[in-house]
Image (cartoon, rainbow, N blue to C red; front, side, top):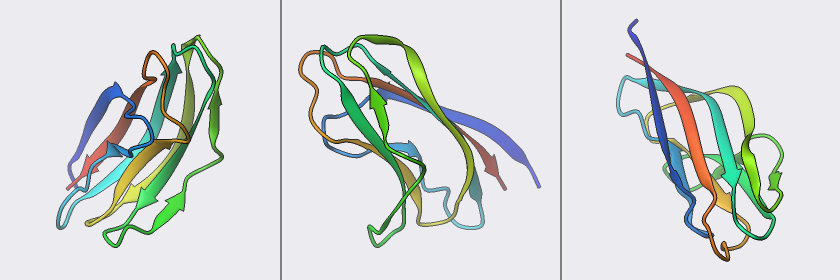
Length: 112
């Protein structure tokens, strides 16, 4: 079995879900290993991470993260979650940002 590390990063998008780990496709699995969030906004934000299947059902991964305003060091969640065909890992903020969108980084291993 081949194992290839991969990652994604970018800003959060208000209360719209952002994909941390994409759908791996048929006969492939992604093993989600960690996500990091950094808040340089002027207000506190709460972010939740979910495993989402193709029918939009959500399974929360861990507790909601509370990011204090102006936190320069990323807060991390670490765990191993297998993402199968038709599933993604997404993150969502409870409220929209005011000045600067929090940033996110995520890592996974693609297993073929």
